[in-house]
Amino acid sequence: MNMRRTVLAVLVCLLGCLWAEAQSQNAETSLPDAQRTAASLDPEDAFLSATRYTNAYFGFEFEIPAEAKLAPVPMPASRDRRIQLLELAGGAPQHAAISLFAYEYKGKNWTDAKGILRRELDQDLYTGVEELHGLSKTTIDGRQFYYFETRKGVEQHEELATELDGYVLLVVLEAKDPQTLKWLTSAFYRLKFFPPREAQQHAGVQAVVYEGPAVSSQRLRELKASPPAERMNPGKIDGNVYLNTQIGVRYEFPKGWNIEPQGAVEPAVLRYRERVSGEPNMGPREREVVKACRRTLLSAWKTRPGADGEVPYDEFGEITLSAMPMECLPNMRFPDDPHDVDGVRRFLLGFSFSHPLQRDMNDARTFEAGGKTFVLTHGTIAYKEAGDELSRRISVAMVMTHHRGFLLVWLIAAPHDAELRELLSAKMGFDPDPATMEAKANAAGDPAKVSPPSGSLSPKPDSESPAASAPASAAENPSSKGQATENSAPPSAPANDATQSRPTLLKPGETMPAEQVQAKPLPKGPSQ
Image 1: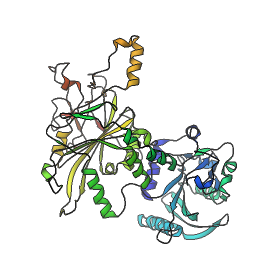
Image 2: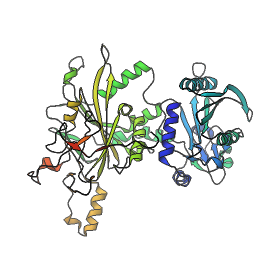
Image 3: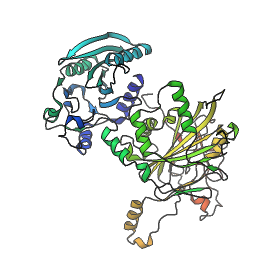
Image 4: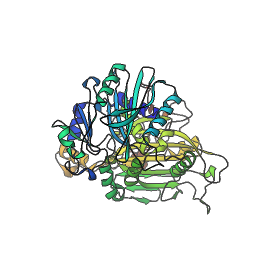
C-alpha cells in the first residue's frame, strides 16, 4: 500500500490532470455497447462525471465532493491481481484521492474482504502509523463493509472492503486535511446500490464512459485477439548489422557475436525472483499486454551457451533489442524533450510496470540526437540460476527511444561496467518517418528533388545549443559520479563515410573513461 501511495503522490504532483481533459479523452471512447446486459460487462465498466461515479457492472454509485477538487488520473496496470476501477486525485493543499479496486474471490482459499483489509492494516502498522480506528464493521445501503482508519504525519486515510458478486471491493479514501477526508467519507457512506441494467440512467446526461484508470479488460481482449507483436516485421541481419524497414532502425552489434531467438538476462532474473518471492514480477493484466505487444527483434550473445545451456560468467555479454507499439500502453508517454524531467519520470514509472528490470536501474540519463530523445538507465542486478552457489552480479543498461510509434529498448548486459561501456559504443541509425519526409517534400515544392535521408542522425555542431552538440547516443559512466562523456567527431572524418553517418551510443573515437558528455542525470524534483 505504501508503494501505491508513493506512486499516487508522484502522479498527482507530475501529471496535473485537468477534469476537462479527462472528459474529452473519455468522451472519445465508448463501451462496446453501453446498453448491453450486466453479464457481458467488465468490473471496471462505469460512467463518470464531475460529481458522480457509477459502476455499471456491480450496480452502485456515489457522489464526488466538489470541495476535494478531484480529477481522474491514468495509472499503470497493477502489479498484483487487483482490477483498478477508479483513480481520482486532487492537488495541493489537500492532496485528496479516491481509489477503487476489485479482487476476484474464488472461495475459501482466496482472501476475503476482512482478510484483505487485515493485510492492508498490518502493512500500515508495520511502516509506522497512528491507528485512529481499528478493523471494524459497518453497514452501507444494507451491505456489510469492513473498514479501518489510520494517520501518518498529516496524511490520513480510511479503507473499506465488502464482497460483491464474486469479487472483493476495496475502497481507499485519503487526504492531508482531516476536513477533506470527512467530505470523502461522508460522500462514500451515502453510496447507493441498484440493478446494474439501470446504470446509465443513474449516471445522468453529464457522465461519460469510463473504463478504469489502466488497461481495460476490453482493450486487453482486443490485443490478445490480434497481437500487435505478430504484425511486427522481425527485420533481417546483414553481417553484424540488424535492419528493420518497418520500424526504420539499423543497429550494428559486435562482430563475431551469436544470434539467439530470445534474451537470457531478463527471463533468468524474473525466474529467480519469482522463485524467491513466490510472487510474479508483473500483474496478470500487464503480463498479458507485454505478451501480446512486445517482440524481441534481435538478441546477440558474446558466447554461445554450452550443452548445459550455461555461459561462463567472464565470457558473458548480451544485447537484446525489443519493440512495442506505444498504443498498447496508452497511459505511458515517451518524452519528446530530453529536458522534460517530469515527463521522463512519468515515462520511467510506467515503463517499470511493463519491464520489471527497470526497477533495478538506479541511474537515469537523457540526451538528444538528430532531433530524437533518448533515455538511458543503468543498474547492477544480482540473481541465481539453478545450481548456482553464489549470486551472479551483472551490469545492465537500457537505452530507450521512440520511433514510428514504437518504443525501442536496447537491453545491454555484461559482467562488469568496463565491458558494458564497450558495448554502448555500437552504432545505430533511424530512417525518417514517412510523414516527415512527405511534409519536407511538400515544403520544398518539388517532391522529386527531395530524397530520403541516408539515416544519419549525427548532430550538427552548435556552440549555442547543448542539445545539438550532445552525442548521438550517450552512455553514462557508472564510476564517474553521475557524469557521462562527449567528444566531437574528428575534423578529418570524411562527410560521406558510412561509419560516420550513423549515430552511435558513443561518438566516433570516443573513450568512456577519458571524456565528458552532456547527457545529464535527471535532477531531483521537489517531491524527492
